Image (tube, rainbow, N blue to C red; front, side):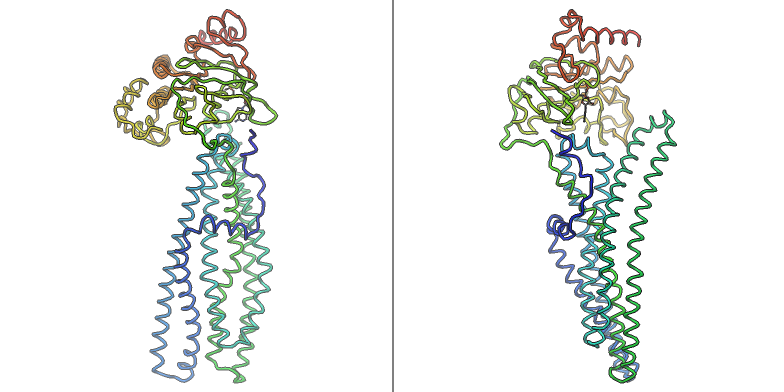
Length: 595
Ligand code: ADP
């Protein structure tokens, strides 16, 4: 397999706006079409009320200002009040409906993206930084929401309002309406071009945002190293550089967007000036009545705002589409490891594991596992030893199919792991790795992780076997104490014992164990060791061994180097061979002596 299959697309391609819009509507907006239908009705009401309020200028001028008609005073006053009240209510309804749809679209997209990521394979997470992935959930999806609600508002409210107002203008003076509307289309072309530039700059900004989050995450997580190596100034300058880059790109977007304003203002002013000069002339020459002229002018001025928004729509939309495009690009990356159609349930009764002539590489040109055959006896222990970078972790990762091998076989009780379902495969395996992950949850939930509904007795029994029960009892809220980032800080040994309790509770026939190398104090070491012995009891264990005791007790030891098995046998036979294992052993023994 190759990492490139799952890497995120690096260059931001520019898809046609219509293609993206269609996909956005089809995949994200479609379930809410009936809500949007209602919103559209209220938008139409609003547009009609706006147009009617412009039309009302005619009777206002003709009956009140010119004919001084007292009866009309109340009637028109009442009509204005009613029109604006209706407009306000319709606006409330459509805004609420649109917000509802916009927020649902966001929530759906976040759920969908997470569901997609949850099933991606490990290599995907290696080739895409956490910051970049998180940025998708926050920045990109939010941009998309803005685009959806702006587009809907524009095509709904603004467009309908414009139609209503244009209708009023034609009603009052068709000739004048034609003249003033000749001017506006000329503004569309330069503004559409601005829109395309906005999308390009926004896409670049989003890429930088992802890098920014990645860098922040790395430096916060590695803050001890940053400090220990006096790298604060260096990290500050790296962050400052990227912050500055984002600021400049954002400013560029703002500037391009603002450019539409002088264009629109000048054209708007020109249209209004022409209407005043030409319309005023017609009034003076008695070719039209003052009421019609004022009503026309009001409609034109009222049309200016929706028109401006429609002209700006493209740039707002392009920003959102840049977000949508990134989202779709990630949604389109397929997981590179699949469950085979018709995969069977693995029934790992004994838990015998066999790797047969296995080849694997992370990247095409560099082979990581070079023809390995090894076996974990059912219920027994096989240990992997060897220098770092030899391929031990890689071998461990091949068994639960975190990666798929290039050739050879990985068999559990004689069944190829590629023939079985993921849940049945992973149920058969318990994994205890060096990096212990405790989630932001209670101690109880952390032990029962992956076994929802485990009984209290089972959880406590597992904790007892893992020599964790006593320290848990002493925590402020016992099993209800929160762990993880926002919870109590546990020692390295305590965390390991919780991880072991989790694996004991899982009660899988196969155990993959990456022994911790971090030095624990003797007492913790002894407790962890006894917990491990409990855990390994009766399970087929493949262990990356760092402790001498584990190696000595193993049924078979494989010495791995350069992705190959260079020696195999039990402790005594390998020592007698006086080869690679004997060397490793002598070195470790010396280390243990001196520490
Ligand atoms: P060990 O566990 O024995 O220290 P690993 O299995 O971690 O060794 O690594 C074996 C080889 O594979 C090393 O050369 C390492 O650089 C490479 N490797 C490990 N993980 C990855 C990865 N995610 N992407 C690319 N190469 C990797």
